[in-house]
Length: 531
Image (cartoon, rainbow, N blue to C red; front, side, top):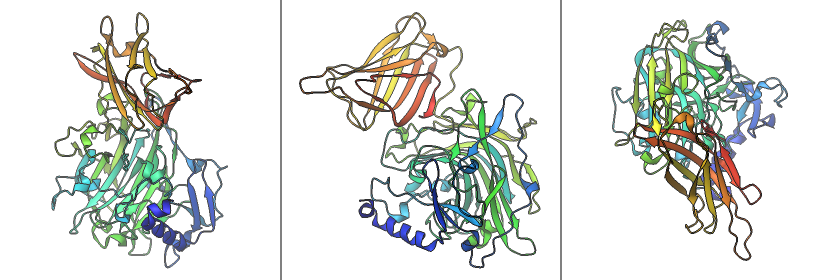
């Protein structure tokens, strides 16, 4: 039982639930459990703070080049069950999918912010716990009291190769202060994180630390509303909410807006860090959490992407950031963050961000993620950036004569006496390659196999590679039934004298299950993300 695997976490969860004054519990269409609590029950005085005026929310600009639409959030549908009036939703943590014992101090930690600004003063030695993080960041040292921006939404592949860890892929903002002996940080954006959200879909998130990421807990730090600190205000938008829909590669873009504002309670000396998503004030972090420091101001802002891998050798990760394509892929292909602004005073004045792009990776590891920044561009996007990876943009003139298939087997193996082929549509007719011969050893559960083949005939441009069909053939011996094979992920790369390019990259749980009755799956070029 999970309670025996993680008794410390279950003790914490039971105490957390007992402390909430739950009026009603609902389940969203995606399976998230929401506990609805009286809004005033979150603060000792029973008085919830006043949000900033509506005029401080950024105006959404529709790009003239193609339609950019706001992404829908899961509670946008009025048919979704809610709590009674006067209550607000809090996501209930789900421990049921944990497969290993995790100490409370290591549960859903986020320590990448220790290394995202390596040029800061008071920079100490980086902890071993931060050596699995990659960043691409627009970085600016300046005094600020908030920030806002728009970012498009994707479904990057994570947990490749498969591990027992807590990989995540994020687009986000960091607001940090270094006045205290330990840095303080306030963060938010969207994240794909199975351990946090129990799926591989983008969710809104917030995170804060008062103590340099050394400890999460009540009024100390942590994600969303896992611990006390965050005060929920909205009844429809909350940290942890699922984002419905993703941007289309080469087509329509779906995005969310986000705003952070340090705002003084009217007729009071009290300040709060308010956070809005899609123009709705979700809630706030009381500035008193930071005991000065970030409660007074931020002195550095970073905006970009973060990938964390739990692999012992981070150089082997194939996790994606953003759309899965590097920054040069650009409009409708790479992740973007646009209309990036800083709040320059406590009156709410907004100015364009004017940061510098940079990357960070574990020591000795080449960073497969890139960033391009366009500050004060003069366009309707003002200051913006593209970022992500791992896939580089191929030269349109490049031609390729080799094709590589990286295939992850999931929870049902490819038997030793079975064979697998792939047929690739190319000019002049399909070419078929043997991924696994009948005489080859079986592909075991949760294994990874890489096969490279030379294309017959002339080298071809990227656009020439058509649909690819993978076929399982069972060679049953006596007493055997047809083989079943779970394909967890497939990455198809073409290469030649001009370099390489990714044709297909997608994962699922499983991505496809091949059986005797359904022995084939067709992969469409240009596909990326989670199935």
